[in-house]
Length: 297
Length: 224
Image (cartoon, one colour):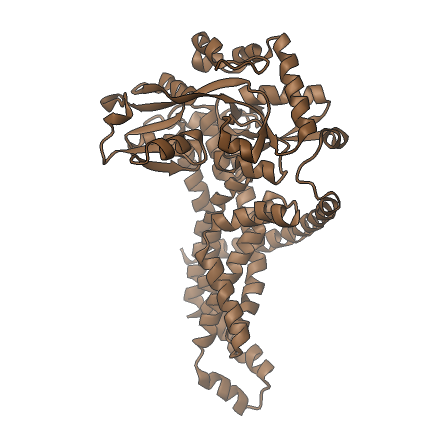
Protein backbone atom coordinates (compact mmCIF):
# COMPACT_ATOMS: atom_id res chain seq x y z
CA UNK A 1 0.00 0.00 0.00
CA UNK A 2 2.79 2.39 0.90
CA UNK A 3 4.48 1.62 -2.39
CA UNK A 4 1.27 2.12 -4.31
CA UNK A 5 0.82 5.54 -2.80
CA UNK A 6 4.39 6.46 -3.54
CA UNK A 7 3.98 5.43 -7.19
CA UNK A 8 0.72 7.37 -7.45
CA UNK A 9 2.43 10.43 -6.02
CA UNK A 10 5.30 10.20 -8.50
CA UNK A 11 2.96 9.74 -11.48
CA UNK A 12 0.94 12.73 -10.37
CA UNK A 13 4.01 14.88 -9.91
CA UNK A 14 5.16 14.05 -13.45
CA UNK A 15 1.69 14.70 -14.83
CA UNK A 16 1.61 18.07 -13.14
CA UNK A 17 4.97 19.08 -14.55
CA UNK A 18 3.76 18.23 -18.06
CA UNK A 19 0.50 20.03 -17.51
CA UNK A 20 2.34 23.12 -16.33
CA UNK A 21 4.60 23.05 -19.36
CA UNK A 22 1.56 22.75 -21.65
CA UNK A 23 -0.21 25.54 -19.81
CA UNK A 24 2.62 27.94 -20.25
CA UNK A 25 2.31 27.99 -24.02
CA UNK A 26 -1.49 28.02 -24.28
CA UNK A 27 -1.82 30.72 -21.61
CA UNK A 28 0.61 32.90 -23.53
CA UNK A 29 -1.21 32.67 -26.85
CA UNK A 30 -4.52 33.39 -25.11
CA UNK A 31 -3.13 36.62 -23.73
CA UNK A 32 -1.89 37.99 -27.02
CA UNK A 33 -5.17 37.14 -28.74
CA UNK A 34 -7.14 39.08 -26.16
CA UNK A 35 -5.01 42.20 -26.38
CA UNK A 36 -5.35 42.18 -30.17
CA UNK A 37 -9.12 42.15 -30.05
CA UNK A 38 -9.12 44.74 -27.28
CA UNK A 39 -7.25 47.09 -29.58
CA UNK A 40 -9.72 46.42 -32.41
CA UNK A 41 -12.70 47.09 -30.18
CA UNK A 42 -11.26 50.31 -28.84
CA UNK A 43 -11.05 51.66 -32.41
CA UNK A 44 -14.68 51.05 -33.31
CA UNK A 45 -16.06 51.23 -29.72
CA UNK A 46 -19.05 49.26 -31.04
CA UNK A 47 -20.65 46.54 -28.95
CA UNK A 48 -22.04 44.77 -31.99
CA UNK A 49 -21.02 43.83 -35.52
CA UNK A 50 -22.98 45.17 -38.46
CA UNK A 51 -24.21 42.97 -41.29
CA UNK A 52 -21.24 43.93 -43.47
CA UNK A 53 -18.75 43.24 -40.70
CA UNK A 54 -20.21 39.76 -40.19
CA UNK A 55 -20.10 39.03 -43.94
CA UNK A 56 -16.53 40.27 -44.11
CA UNK A 57 -15.53 38.10 -41.16
CA UNK A 58 -17.12 35.05 -42.80
CA UNK A 59 -18.48 33.78 -39.49
CA UNK A 60 -21.64 34.63 -37.53
CA UNK A 61 -21.85 33.91 -33.78
CA UNK A 62 -25.28 32.57 -32.87
CA UNK A 63 -26.20 31.88 -29.26
CA UNK A 64 -28.34 28.75 -28.88
CA UNK A 65 -29.22 26.36 -26.07
CA UNK A 66 -27.09 23.26 -26.01
CA UNK A 67 -29.29 21.31 -23.60
CA UNK A 68 -32.82 22.04 -24.71
CA UNK A 69 -34.02 19.21 -26.88
CA UNK A 70 -35.76 19.70 -29.38
CA UNK A 71 -35.05 23.45 -29.79
CA UNK A 72 -31.32 23.55 -29.36
CA UNK A 73 -29.21 20.58 -28.29
CA UNK A 74 -26.05 18.70 -29.16
CA UNK A 75 -26.32 15.22 -30.65
CA UNK A 76 -24.03 12.28 -29.95
CA UNK A 77 -21.56 13.42 -32.62
CA UNK A 78 -21.17 16.82 -31.01
CA UNK A 79 -23.31 18.56 -33.67
CA UNK A 80 -25.86 21.21 -32.74
CA UNK A 81 -29.45 20.20 -33.66
CA UNK A 82 -33.03 21.40 -33.15
CA UNK A 83 -35.69 23.88 -34.28
CA UNK A 84 -33.59 26.97 -33.49
CA UNK A 85 -30.45 25.41 -34.93
CA UNK A 86 -32.21 24.46 -38.18
CA UNK A 87 -33.11 28.15 -38.61
CA UNK A 88 -29.61 29.26 -37.59
CA UNK A 89 -28.04 27.05 -40.24
CA UNK A 90 -30.37 28.55 -42.85
CA UNK A 91 -29.32 32.06 -41.75
CA UNK A 92 -25.68 31.10 -42.20
CA UNK A 93 -26.42 29.60 -45.61
CA UNK A 94 -28.32 32.68 -46.87
CA UNK A 95 -25.73 35.09 -45.49
CA UNK A 96 -22.98 33.00 -47.02
CA UNK A 97 -21.08 32.71 -43.74
CA UNK A 98 -20.10 29.93 -41.38
CA UNK A 99 -22.21 29.58 -38.22
CA UNK A 100 -20.34 29.50 -34.91
CA UNK A 101 -22.71 28.16 -32.24
CA UNK A 102 -22.26 29.53 -28.72
CA UNK A 103 -23.78 27.58 -25.84
CA UNK A 104 -25.94 29.95 -23.75
CA UNK A 105 -28.03 29.57 -20.61
CA UNK A 106 -31.42 31.18 -20.04
CA UNK A 107 -29.93 33.55 -17.47
CA UNK A 108 -27.12 34.96 -19.62
CA UNK A 109 -28.74 35.48 -23.06
CA UNK A 110 -29.17 39.27 -22.72
CA UNK A 111 -25.62 39.70 -21.41
CA UNK A 112 -24.27 37.85 -24.42
CA UNK A 113 -26.03 40.26 -26.81
CA UNK A 114 -25.24 43.42 -24.89
CA UNK A 115 -21.55 42.61 -24.82
CA UNK A 116 -21.54 41.63 -28.50
CA UNK A 117 -20.20 38.18 -27.67
CA UNK A 118 -22.85 36.79 -30.02
CA UNK A 119 -24.49 38.45 -33.04
CA UNK A 120 -27.88 36.75 -32.76
CA UNK A 121 -29.65 34.85 -29.99
CA UNK A 122 -31.78 31.99 -31.25
CA UNK A 123 -32.32 30.31 -27.91
CA UNK A 124 -36.07 29.92 -27.59
CA UNK A 125 -36.15 33.60 -26.65
CA UNK A 126 -39.66 34.79 -25.69
CA UNK A 127 -40.48 38.39 -26.60
CA UNK A 128 -41.38 40.54 -23.58
CA UNK A 129 -41.56 44.34 -23.20
CA UNK A 130 -38.83 44.27 -20.52
CA UNK A 131 -36.46 42.35 -22.75
CA UNK A 132 -37.31 44.58 -25.73
CA UNK A 133 -35.78 47.47 -23.80
CA UNK A 134 -32.49 45.58 -23.55
CA UNK A 135 -32.27 43.92 -26.96
CA UNK A 136 -33.91 44.26 -30.39
CA UNK A 137 -36.26 41.44 -31.40
CA UNK A 138 -36.78 40.48 -35.03
CA UNK A 139 -40.09 39.06 -36.33
CA UNK A 140 -41.37 36.04 -34.41
CA UNK A 141 -41.08 32.46 -35.66
CA UNK A 142 -43.02 30.62 -32.98
CA UNK A 143 -45.92 30.98 -30.49
CA UNK A 144 -45.60 30.21 -26.84
CA UNK A 145 -47.50 30.52 -23.56
CA UNK A 146 -46.64 29.36 -20.06
CA UNK A 147 -47.64 25.97 -18.74
CA UNK A 148 -47.39 24.13 -15.44
CA UNK A 149 -46.56 20.45 -15.16
CA UNK A 150 -46.98 18.41 -11.99
CA UNK A 151 -46.82 14.74 -10.92
CA UNK A 152 -49.96 12.61 -11.45
CA UNK A 153 -50.12 11.98 -7.72
CA UNK A 154 -51.19 15.59 -7.25
CA UNK A 155 -52.05 17.44 -10.46
CA UNK A 156 -52.02 21.21 -10.12
CA UNK A 157 -54.83 22.47 -12.40
CA UNK A 158 -54.88 26.02 -11.10
CA UNK A 159 -52.42 28.14 -9.19
CA UNK A 160 -55.03 28.20 -6.39
CA UNK A 161 -54.32 24.49 -5.81
CA UNK A 162 -50.96 25.42 -4.39
CA UNK A 163 -50.81 25.58 -0.60
CA UNK A 164 -48.56 27.92 1.34
CA UNK A 165 -45.98 25.14 1.74
CA UNK A 166 -45.78 24.24 -1.95
CA UNK A 167 -42.89 25.44 -4.03
CA UNK A 168 -42.81 25.85 -7.82
CA UNK A 169 -39.72 25.19 -9.94
CA UNK A 170 -38.67 27.83 -12.45
CA UNK A 171 -35.51 28.39 -14.46
CA UNK A 172 -33.80 31.70 -13.68
CA UNK A 173 -34.18 34.28 -16.42
CA UNK A 174 -37.21 32.66 -18.10
CA UNK A 175 -40.63 34.26 -18.65
CA UNK A 176 -42.13 31.85 -16.13
CA UNK A 177 -39.98 33.36 -13.40
CA UNK A 178 -40.94 36.93 -14.31
CA UNK A 179 -44.63 36.10 -14.66
CA UNK A 180 -44.93 34.34 -11.30
CA UNK A 181 -42.84 36.94 -9.48
CA UNK A 182 -45.05 39.75 -10.80
CA UNK A 183 -48.51 38.18 -10.72
CA UNK A 184 -48.26 35.63 -7.93
CA UNK A 185 -45.62 36.89 -5.50
CA UNK A 186 -47.11 34.68 -2.76
CA UNK A 187 -45.92 31.51 -4.53
CA UNK A 188 -42.56 30.27 -3.31
CA UNK A 189 -40.21 29.70 -6.23
CA UNK A 190 -37.34 27.24 -6.49
CA UNK A 191 -34.93 28.66 -9.02
CA UNK A 192 -32.46 26.66 -11.08
CA UNK A 193 -29.87 27.91 -13.52
CA UNK A 194 -30.10 25.13 -16.05
CA UNK A 195 -32.90 23.20 -17.65
CA UNK A 196 -31.34 19.89 -16.67
CA UNK A 197 -31.19 20.84 -13.00
CA UNK A 198 -34.83 21.98 -12.96
CA UNK A 199 -35.88 18.69 -14.53
CA UNK A 200 -33.92 16.71 -11.97
CA UNK A 201 -35.50 18.74 -9.16
CA UNK A 202 -39.04 17.93 -10.35
CA UNK A 203 -38.19 14.26 -10.73
CA UNK A 204 -36.69 14.17 -7.26
CA UNK A 205 -39.91 15.62 -5.83
CA UNK A 206 -38.29 18.83 -4.58
CA UNK A 207 -41.35 20.90 -5.50
CA UNK A 208 -45.07 20.58 -6.27
CA UNK A 209 -44.86 21.73 -9.90
CA UNK A 210 -42.67 23.15 -12.64
CA UNK A 211 -43.67 26.29 -14.53
CA UNK A 212 -42.06 26.87 -17.92
CA UNK A 213 -42.95 27.58 -21.54
CA UNK A 214 -45.94 25.38 -22.46
CA UNK A 215 -44.04 23.75 -25.32
CA UNK A 216 -41.55 22.53 -22.77
CA UNK A 217 -44.04 21.17 -20.29
CA UNK A 218 -46.22 19.54 -23.00
CA UNK A 219 -43.19 17.77 -24.40
CA UNK A 220 -42.02 16.85 -20.94
CA UNK A 221 -45.39 15.32 -19.95
CA UNK A 222 -45.66 13.42 -23.27
CA UNK A 223 -42.30 11.77 -22.69
CA UNK A 224 -42.47 11.24 -18.95
CA UNK A 225 -45.42 9.10 -17.88
CA UNK A 226 -46.53 10.06 -14.42
CA UNK A 227 -46.51 13.79 -15.11
CA UNK A 228 -49.42 15.86 -16.45
CA UNK A 229 -49.75 19.41 -17.69
CA UNK A 230 -52.47 20.62 -15.32
CA UNK A 231 -52.29 24.21 -16.59
CA UNK A 232 -51.64 24.27 -20.37
CA UNK A 233 -51.86 28.04 -20.83
CA UNK A 234 -51.04 30.58 -18.19
CA UNK A 235 -50.62 34.27 -18.79
CA UNK A 236 -50.72 35.89 -22.20
CA UNK A 237 -49.79 34.32 -25.52
CA UNK A 238 -46.23 35.25 -26.34
CA UNK A 239 -43.98 34.76 -29.30
CA UNK A 240 -40.44 33.55 -29.77
CA UNK A 241 -38.16 35.60 -31.99
CA UNK A 242 -34.49 36.03 -32.82
CA UNK A 243 -32.82 38.87 -30.93
CA UNK A 244 -29.87 41.09 -31.83
CA UNK A 245 -27.91 43.69 -29.88
CA UNK A 246 -29.87 46.93 -29.33
CA UNK A 247 -29.19 49.28 -32.24
CA UNK A 248 -27.84 46.67 -34.66
CA UNK A 249 -30.30 47.82 -37.34
CA UNK A 250 -28.58 46.37 -40.41
CA UNK A 251 -28.63 42.85 -39.00
CA UNK A 252 -32.17 43.30 -37.65
CA UNK A 253 -33.49 44.43 -41.03
CA UNK A 254 -31.78 41.54 -42.79
CA UNK A 255 -33.29 39.05 -40.33
CA UNK A 256 -36.80 40.51 -40.77
CA UNK A 257 -36.51 40.34 -44.57
CA UNK A 258 -35.19 36.80 -44.26
CA UNK A 259 -38.09 35.68 -42.07
CA UNK A 260 -40.63 37.22 -44.49
CA UNK A 261 -38.93 35.60 -47.48
CA UNK A 262 -38.79 32.21 -45.74
CA UNK A 263 -42.57 32.41 -45.21
CA UNK A 264 -43.04 32.07 -48.97
CA UNK A 265 -41.64 28.58 -48.87
CA UNK A 266 -43.28 27.65 -45.51
CA UNK A 267 -39.80 27.24 -44.09
CA UNK A 268 -40.84 27.03 -40.43
CA UNK A 269 -43.38 24.29 -41.17
CA UNK A 270 -40.56 22.33 -42.75
CA UNK A 271 -38.44 23.12 -39.70
CA UNK A 272 -41.24 21.86 -37.41
CA UNK A 273 -41.62 18.66 -39.39
CA UNK A 274 -37.87 18.11 -39.31
CA UNK A 275 -37.23 18.83 -35.65
CA UNK A 276 -40.37 19.13 -33.51
CA UNK A 277 -42.84 16.58 -34.87
CA UNK A 278 -41.33 13.74 -32.83
CA UNK A 279 -41.86 15.69 -29.66
CA UNK A 280 -45.23 17.42 -30.11
CA UNK A 281 -46.90 15.41 -32.88
CA UNK A 282 -48.68 17.13 -35.77
CA UNK A 283 -51.59 18.42 -33.67
CA UNK A 284 -49.61 21.36 -32.31
CA UNK A 285 -48.03 22.35 -35.64
CA UNK A 286 -50.47 25.12 -36.61
CA UNK A 287 -50.70 26.58 -33.12
CA UNK A 288 -46.93 26.67 -32.57
CA UNK A 289 -45.45 27.70 -35.91
CA UNK A 290 -45.40 31.33 -37.08
CA UNK A 291 -44.61 32.06 -40.74
CA UNK A 292 -43.42 35.46 -42.07
CA UNK A 293 -43.71 36.91 -38.58
CA UNK A 294 -47.55 36.82 -38.66
CA UNK A 295 -48.24 35.82 -35.09
CA UNK A 296 -51.86 35.18 -34.09
CA UNK A 297 -52.62 37.81 -31.52
CA UNK B 1 -28.95 -4.11 -12.06
CA UNK B 2 -31.20 -1.10 -12.68
CA UNK B 3 -31.06 0.61 -16.08
CA UNK B 4 -28.74 3.56 -15.64
CA UNK B 5 -28.90 4.55 -19.31
CA UNK B 6 -25.15 4.00 -19.60
CA UNK B 7 -25.58 2.79 -23.20
CA UNK B 8 -25.98 6.48 -24.08
CA UNK B 9 -22.27 6.94 -23.34
CA UNK B 10 -21.33 4.59 -26.16
CA UNK B 11 -23.46 6.36 -28.77
CA UNK B 12 -21.40 8.30 -31.28
CA UNK B 13 -18.60 10.31 -29.70
CA UNK B 14 -20.32 10.79 -26.35
CA UNK B 15 -17.58 9.26 -24.18
CA UNK B 16 -14.88 11.22 -26.00
CA UNK B 17 -16.91 14.42 -25.62
CA UNK B 18 -17.27 13.80 -21.88
CA UNK B 19 -13.53 13.21 -21.53
CA UNK B 20 -12.88 16.32 -23.60
CA UNK B 21 -15.08 18.28 -21.19
CA UNK B 22 -13.15 16.85 -18.25
CA UNK B 23 -9.90 17.96 -19.85
CA UNK B 24 -11.28 21.51 -20.21
CA UNK B 25 -12.11 21.58 -16.49
CA UNK B 26 -8.77 20.09 -15.46
CA UNK B 27 -6.77 22.32 -17.82
CA UNK B 28 -8.38 25.49 -16.50
CA UNK B 29 -7.85 24.51 -12.88
CA UNK B 30 -4.24 23.43 -13.41
CA UNK B 31 -3.31 26.67 -15.22
CA UNK B 32 -4.96 28.63 -12.41
CA UNK B 33 -3.19 26.59 -9.75
CA UNK B 34 0.16 27.04 -11.47
CA UNK B 35 -0.36 30.79 -11.48
CA UNK B 36 -1.90 31.15 -8.04
CA UNK B 37 0.77 29.27 -6.09
CA UNK B 38 3.67 31.68 -6.84
CA UNK B 39 1.37 34.72 -6.73
CA UNK B 40 -0.18 33.51 -3.50
CA UNK B 41 3.23 33.01 -1.87
CA UNK B 42 4.15 36.59 -2.78
CA UNK B 43 0.80 37.87 -1.49
CA UNK B 44 1.21 35.90 1.74
CA UNK B 45 4.64 37.42 2.36
CA UNK B 46 3.30 40.92 1.68
CA UNK B 47 0.42 40.25 4.08
CA UNK B 48 2.82 39.66 6.97
CA UNK B 49 4.40 43.10 6.54
CA UNK B 50 3.65 45.57 9.30
CA UNK B 51 3.06 48.40 6.79
CA UNK B 52 -0.54 49.64 7.33
CA UNK B 53 -1.07 50.43 3.62
CA UNK B 54 -0.11 46.98 2.30
CA UNK B 55 -2.03 45.44 5.20
CA UNK B 56 -5.24 47.26 4.28
CA UNK B 57 -4.92 46.72 0.54
CA UNK B 58 -4.23 42.99 0.80
CA UNK B 59 -6.97 42.60 3.41
CA UNK B 60 -9.52 44.29 1.14
CA UNK B 61 -8.44 42.12 -1.81
CA UNK B 62 -8.71 38.95 0.22
CA UNK B 63 -12.10 39.78 1.70
CA UNK B 64 -13.49 40.95 -1.65
CA UNK B 65 -12.54 37.74 -3.41
CA UNK B 66 -13.62 35.54 -0.51
CA UNK B 67 -17.01 37.18 0.00
CA UNK B 68 -17.96 37.37 -3.70
CA UNK B 69 -19.43 34.14 -5.03
CA UNK B 70 -17.24 32.76 -7.79
CA UNK B 71 -20.18 32.96 -10.19
CA UNK B 72 -20.42 36.73 -9.69
CA UNK B 73 -16.69 37.08 -10.27
CA UNK B 74 -17.01 35.09 -13.49
CA UNK B 75 -19.81 37.34 -14.74
CA UNK B 76 -17.84 40.47 -13.81
CA UNK B 77 -14.74 39.33 -15.68
CA UNK B 78 -16.51 37.81 -18.69
CA UNK B 79 -19.32 40.32 -19.33
CA UNK B 80 -18.54 43.51 -17.41
CA UNK B 81 -15.01 43.77 -18.78
CA UNK B 82 -16.48 43.83 -22.30
CA UNK B 83 -19.14 46.34 -21.29
CA UNK B 84 -16.76 48.68 -19.50
CA UNK B 85 -13.47 48.36 -21.34
CA UNK B 86 -14.48 46.65 -24.58
CA UNK B 87 -12.15 43.71 -23.88
CA UNK B 88 -13.44 40.62 -25.63
CA UNK B 89 -11.94 37.86 -23.54
CA UNK B 90 -12.84 34.23 -24.12
CA UNK B 91 -14.77 32.26 -21.54
CA UNK B 92 -11.76 30.09 -20.83
CA UNK B 93 -9.43 33.03 -20.24
CA UNK B 94 -12.04 34.68 -18.00
CA UNK B 95 -12.22 31.46 -15.98
CA UNK B 96 -8.46 31.33 -15.61
CA UNK B 97 -8.40 34.98 -14.46
CA UNK B 98 -11.13 34.42 -11.85
CA UNK B 99 -9.71 31.16 -10.57
CA UNK B 100 -6.24 32.65 -10.36
CA UNK B 101 -7.52 35.69 -8.45
CA UNK B 102 -9.42 33.40 -6.11
CA UNK B 103 -6.56 30.92 -5.72
CA UNK B 104 -4.09 33.74 -5.08
CA UNK B 105 -6.26 35.18 -2.33
CA UNK B 106 -6.80 31.81 -0.63
CA UNK B 107 -3.20 30.77 -1.09
CA UNK B 108 -2.02 34.15 0.23
CA UNK B 109 -3.99 33.67 3.40
CA UNK B 110 -2.62 30.14 3.83
CA UNK B 111 0.94 31.41 3.37
CA UNK B 112 0.33 34.25 5.80
CA UNK B 113 -1.01 31.76 8.36
CA UNK B 114 1.95 29.44 7.85
CA UNK B 115 4.45 32.29 8.12
CA UNK B 116 3.10 33.71 11.37
CA UNK B 117 2.91 30.22 12.82
CA UNK B 118 6.72 30.04 12.66
CA UNK B 119 7.87 30.98 16.18
CA UNK B 120 9.68 34.29 16.57
CA UNK B 121 12.80 32.60 17.94
CA UNK B 122 13.44 31.05 14.53
CA UNK B 123 13.96 34.55 13.10
CA UNK B 124 16.02 35.56 16.15
CA UNK B 125 18.21 32.48 15.92
CA UNK B 126 18.83 33.30 12.28
CA UNK B 127 19.87 36.82 13.19
CA UNK B 128 22.08 35.46 16.00
CA UNK B 129 23.92 33.36 13.41
CA UNK B 130 24.60 36.59 11.46
CA UNK B 131 22.29 35.56 8.58
CA UNK B 132 20.86 38.42 6.56
CA UNK B 133 17.02 38.77 6.59
CA UNK B 134 16.98 37.25 3.08
CA UNK B 135 19.11 34.29 4.18
CA UNK B 136 16.93 33.78 7.23
CA UNK B 137 13.88 33.63 4.99
CA UNK B 138 15.49 31.43 2.39
CA UNK B 139 17.23 28.88 4.61
CA UNK B 140 15.11 28.81 7.74
CA UNK B 141 11.61 30.20 7.36
CA UNK B 142 10.59 29.12 3.84
CA UNK B 143 11.51 25.43 4.20
CA UNK B 144 9.45 25.19 7.36
CA UNK B 145 6.56 27.12 5.81
CA UNK B 146 6.43 24.92 2.74
CA UNK B 147 6.01 21.83 4.88
CA UNK B 148 3.02 23.34 6.61
CA UNK B 149 1.63 24.61 3.33
CA UNK B 150 1.71 21.64 0.99
CA UNK B 151 -1.24 19.70 2.45
CA UNK B 152 -3.35 22.85 2.71
CA UNK B 153 -2.62 24.08 -0.78
CA UNK B 154 -3.33 20.69 -2.32
CA UNK B 155 -6.77 20.79 -0.75
CA UNK B 156 -7.23 24.16 -2.43
CA UNK B 157 -6.40 22.50 -5.76
CA UNK B 158 -9.17 19.91 -5.40
CA UNK B 159 -11.64 22.65 -4.44
CA UNK B 160 -10.69 24.58 -7.55
CA UNK B 161 -11.21 21.55 -9.80
CA UNK B 162 -14.68 21.02 -8.37
CA UNK B 163 -15.63 24.69 -8.67
CA UNK B 164 -14.97 24.64 -12.42
CA UNK B 165 -18.53 23.31 -12.71
CA UNK B 166 -19.60 26.99 -12.56
CA UNK B 167 -17.86 28.03 -15.77
CA UNK B 168 -20.65 26.58 -17.90
CA UNK B 169 -22.48 29.81 -17.02
CA UNK B 170 -20.07 31.81 -19.16
CA UNK B 171 -20.34 29.49 -22.11
CA UNK B 172 -17.38 27.21 -21.45
CA UNK B 173 -18.50 23.68 -22.27
CA UNK B 174 -16.82 21.59 -19.57
CA UNK B 175 -17.57 18.11 -18.29
CA UNK B 176 -20.81 18.95 -16.47
CA UNK B 177 -22.21 20.85 -19.44
CA UNK B 178 -21.36 17.99 -21.80
CA UNK B 179 -23.10 15.65 -19.35
CA UNK B 180 -26.23 17.81 -19.41
CA UNK B 181 -26.10 18.00 -23.21
CA UNK B 182 -25.87 14.22 -23.47
CA UNK B 183 -28.73 13.71 -21.01
CA UNK B 184 -30.94 16.21 -22.81
CA UNK B 185 -30.23 14.93 -26.31
CA UNK B 186 -31.34 11.47 -25.19
CA UNK B 187 -34.16 12.39 -22.87
CA UNK B 188 -36.69 10.54 -25.02
CA UNK B 189 -34.78 7.35 -25.72
CA UNK B 190 -33.04 7.00 -22.33
CA UNK B 191 -34.88 8.89 -19.62
CA UNK B 192 -32.73 7.21 -16.96
CA UNK B 193 -29.50 8.50 -18.44
CA UNK B 194 -29.36 11.43 -15.99
CA UNK B 195 -28.48 9.10 -13.14
CA UNK B 196 -25.91 7.06 -15.05
CA UNK B 197 -24.18 10.04 -16.67
CA UNK B 198 -23.97 12.02 -13.44
CA UNK B 199 -22.55 8.89 -11.80
CA UNK B 200 -19.86 8.74 -14.48
CA UNK B 201 -19.12 12.44 -13.96
CA UNK B 202 -18.81 11.82 -10.22
CA UNK B 203 -16.35 9.00 -10.87
CA UNK B 204 -14.38 11.28 -13.22
CA UNK B 205 -14.09 14.05 -10.62
CA UNK B 206 -13.09 11.40 -8.08
CA UNK B 207 -10.40 9.98 -10.36
CA UNK B 208 -8.89 13.45 -10.68
CA UNK B 209 -9.21 14.60 -7.07
CA UNK B 210 -8.43 11.34 -5.27
CA UNK B 211 -4.77 11.04 -6.36
CA UNK B 212 -4.33 14.68 -5.41
CA UNK B 213 -5.62 14.11 -1.88
CA UNK B 214 -3.50 10.95 -1.66
CA UNK B 215 -0.48 13.08 -2.51
CA UNK B 216 -1.43 15.52 0.25
CA UNK B 217 -1.72 12.68 2.75
CA UNK B 218 1.58 11.20 1.67
CA UNK B 219 3.42 14.49 1.98
CA UNK B 220 1.83 15.17 5.35
CA UNK B 221 3.08 11.83 6.66
CA UNK B 222 6.50 12.20 5.18
CA UNK B 223 7.22 15.68 6.46
CA UNK B 224 5.60 15.73 9.86
